[in-house]
Length: 249
Ligand code: NAI
Image 1 (cartoon, protein in one colour):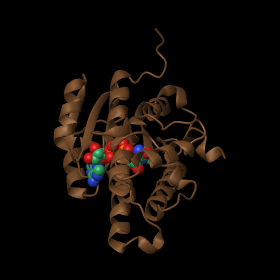
Image 2: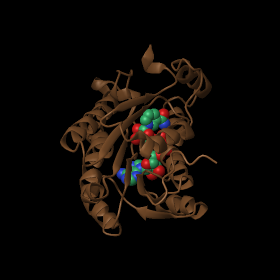
Image 3: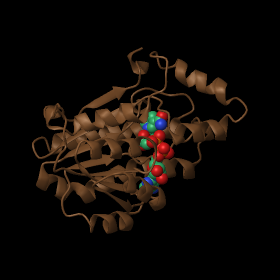
């Protein structure tokens, strides 16, 4: 059996790992041999996932709260891989976006990457580790009715490139920019904003991805695994789209 892309003896922490892309990533990293901290606001769901995996541990972390982040990192003495995945969406153009909602999206999607990465930095420098930020195509192109979300994911791309230039030899940091992926995040959006036309809007989401389907959490998790493996040693400061061809158009 091929030993490619293995993560044996690596310790990883995935934020927002109790659901969707984060959960698939935690599973994939564990299958690759890593020990995984499943960090999430939702400790019950994190514990349930951890119980399915060997070498996984649930940890409560609110990525918007520096005290909660510090408490979680107080329990971690070594870290090779940080996946900044926790994030939320918001629908609305600039006129419909309130200051409170804008700040909430920025706190969860942007400040979190700053604060969690800063807390993890000494450990990642010690291990010459790897950071994967989960951005979005919304950071690369304008998406209708996603003013705050686009702004936040643009910042995730910018933070990725900036950290890469400050620490070019000390660690690696890359950003994955997924198109629409079938997760509770998308189902919640369909139910909240389009409850009378779920299948019509789902078909529109599929149609903007030339490949003709939504992504799966596993599509994204495989790329996370690759990017933090030894085989991806030469990839640094990159923003990698994984969107069924959406942004190629
Ligand atoms: P999801 O809603 O299925 O899971 C998000 C997880 O983050 C949940 O377990 C939630 O409890 C956790 N979380 C939320 N706020 C938190 C906080 N303050 N502290 C700690 N954990 C928190 O979402 P999904 O779809 O898996 O998204 C994950 C990431 O992927 C997000 O950053 C999202 O913006 C990004 N993304 C998702 C896409 C999609 O179509 N699903 C497309 C492109 C990017």
